Length: 104
Image 1 (spheres, rainbow, N blue to C red):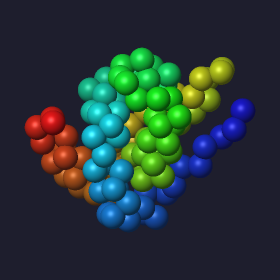
Image 2 (image 1 turned 90 degrees about the vertical axis):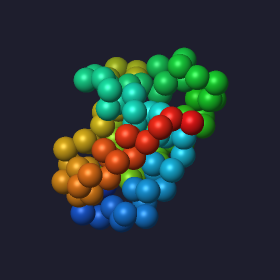
Image 3 (image 1 turned 135 degrees about the horizontal axis):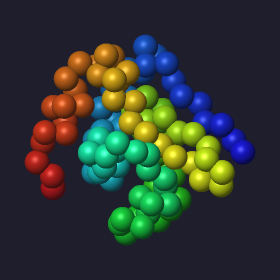
Image 4 (image 1 turned 180 degrees about the vertical axis):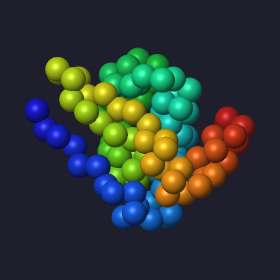
């Protein structure tokens, strides 16, 4: 099973973080991860909406590349969790500010 690369947060630019949070689908994934204590699979995210699984996989890749999520293999699934503490240390207040905004 493939292991996903996770960037060091020091290597993530503000532009990359903002790009990842600018999409409504990715922001919805981050909101779901922030509101729950567990992990989220791409398949469970697909069941929650009308987005194809291949598109969701790309969204998860962008979130991983921005340092927002960590993905691990669990059997045949990949589970993602929010890297909240690490992200907040790198960009203090950014996630709180973005998540406070009203939903579309």
